[in-house]
Image (tube, rainbow over all chains, first blue to last red; front, side, top):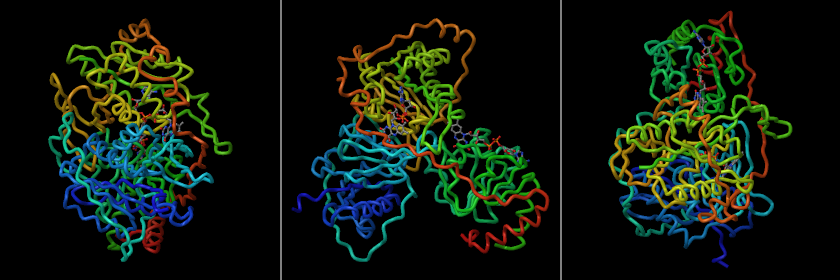
Amino acid sequence: MINDVKKIVILAEQKKGKIHKVTYELLGKAAELIASFPEGQFEKDVIVLGSDQLNLDEILHHGADKIYHIAANSFDMPDEWLYKENICELLKQIQPEMLLVGATTFGRSLAPRIAAALETGLTADCTELMIDTDGKLIQIRPAFSDNILAHIKTETLPQMATIRYKEFAPAEWTDEVNGEIIKVDAYVKGNELIEILEELEESEFDISDAHIVISAGKGIKSKEDMKMIYELAECLKADVGASRAIVDEGYIDKSHQVGYSGNRVKPSLYIACGVSGAPQHLAGMKESDVIVAINSDASAPIFEVSDYGIVGDVYKVVPMLIERLRSKEI
Amino acid sequence: MNIAILIKQVPDMERVKFDCERGLVDRSTAGVEINPFDLNALEAGVNIAESKGCESVVLTMGPPRGADSLREGIARGASRGILLSDRAFGGADTKATSKTLAAALKKMGVPEIILVGEKTVDGDTGQVGAEIAEFLGIPHISYIEEILNISENDITVVSNIFDGKFVKKAKFPVLLTVTKDLNVPRLPSFKSKSIARKAEIPTWSLEELSDFIEKEEVGIKGSPTKVRKIVVPKAESRVCKKEKDNIENFLDEMIGDLIEKNVLEG
Ligand SMILES: Cc1cc2nc3c(=O)[nH]c(=O)nc-3n(C[C@H](O)[C@H](O)[C@H](O)COP(=O)(O)OP(=O)(O)OC[C@H]3O[C@@H](n4cnc5c(N)ncnc54)[C@H](O)[C@@H]3O)c2cc1C
Ligand SMILES: Cc1cc2nc3c(=O)[nH]c(=O)nc-3n(C[C@H](O)[C@H](O)[C@H](O)COP(=O)(O)OP(=O)(O)OC[C@H]3O[C@@H](n4cnc5c(N)ncnc54)[C@H](O)[C@@H]3O)c2cc1C
């Protein structure tokens, strides 16, 4: 009987020992999927690659049944080929039904290599997963630049998907731990074809976890004028976001760009200053809890997704807002 | 050295209509264009070819009108184009698409450098590049922002991945996925447009690729993923409290609301 247990495998990403948080969300989702099958039919396992010293207790506390730790120092660098070789070797033993990968940049670059090596299908960047009446996964993903949702099924095994960060609630942390860690030495440790020479400065700035975002668009006329945006951000302990238009102008670094080809944010408050609200910008911010727009054009599309709209000149409204927030000392 | 650039013909997203009621994507009134991200791959390929004095070939898999995109590719500096077109290729997912493109690259003799875009604006998976690399058994590097050096046997680039920027060096042949930050695509010139108009575009069907791929591996048959349903979500809209006259008052009230809802707490 025990050998018949099917597996959902989650590929966990770690950098410098820190487990990417999407891992816990995938464990949460896996538990939910497993609950639609008879008890004991499925287990949820995690594969993680990294140095010998990785501490994986957090993953156990989030409900993993087995953690396979493939150990080698070479996994500190994002080498898709090396990861793929090792993961595919291990998967030969596990033979999972489903393989879920966080849709981080590395995940989206690695997963298709694994899928191709396993000759299986891969669904990209999913925002929802469900179990169909035949026990197979229904994978739901936005496509056509986020305009539609496609329901996709995979006919081969494992059913593979990359999953967006911050779509699912993380699994609860439990005191009690039932899982085990299985450590294996890396099957392949080096790669002749690619050499990763160095990591340049660590990614400057990450807007994706911001609590409040003050975003600037082409309504801001020069780099100097960004000063008032930074001031407003400071009042609210917020991060500064940007439309692509002003990133292209060189007012601000690309890491601040919000949207389809930038970052996706879900803050509790998003204030768009002089942003028109092009679909590609909305794709990155429309799920914010509260959206405020400041725009001189009353018909700007940004107002359609906003909770509060101020039809006015950013050069007047932003300073007014700063003054009020300062006097309230929030 | 040989360089191949893979481009996909996509609908002009500004003009595609989405029908919420029936869950349909209507592309009939939208024109087609080269996937915007692929223009950066093209520019990079043409630049390298110019500096090394070698050829750059644009390839696309799709219906016959894909030839127009190849001509545009030539107008933007590519040396020539090859169209992969066959009824049997229709309905391909990323696996079948990648296998077909990989077969064509094998037939050409795998080029030292293969360039693709970060993702497309329609299918939007960003998977085709890495899958091709695996099917060819060559390395790939994703999210390239900068090309630092190209020597006889290898290329060094900056890849924006894994929450950082990594300098990676790959031996040829290699597949590179580029970002929009890599360059600014050039516009076609009058002269290159007229060359492009006259260019001959060979079409390879399944038959031409038969030494490198089986018929079960292409199109719908070779596709393990199936789109079962398309849902067009209602355009996201909120009830917006809007003000243009009494802004000062409005801001006070808004700040009051936000404080009350605990939105401003860090
Ligand atoms: C493939 C692709 C990917 C893309 N990805 C992204 C992306 O990730 N992120 C992104 O943002 N864009 C993206 N874009 C670009 C997008 O289509 C828009 O061009 C861009 O978002 C516009 O930026 P904007 O709103 O700042 O500028 P504009 O559209 O020029 O809008 C400026 C706004 O400011 C208002 N304004 C002007 N002066 C004032 C003033 N004094 N006071 C108040 N308001 C004022 C105007 O009324 C206008 O609404 C992408 C496009 C493509 C084709
Ligand atoms: C709504 C919808 C959802 C889909 N979801 C999935 C899915 O989750 N998984 C899946 O496997 N398939 C999926 N597909 C099928 C997929 O769109 C097609 O396989 C498509 O041919 C290639 O994928 P892409 O557009 O995502 O390309 P991407 O992988 O995003 O393209 C990356 C790069 O590869 C090159 N490239 C891509 N296609 C071609 C081509 N035809 N010719 C030349 N170069 C090319 C370009 O340089 C491009 O920039 C979906 C299709 C639709 C309509």
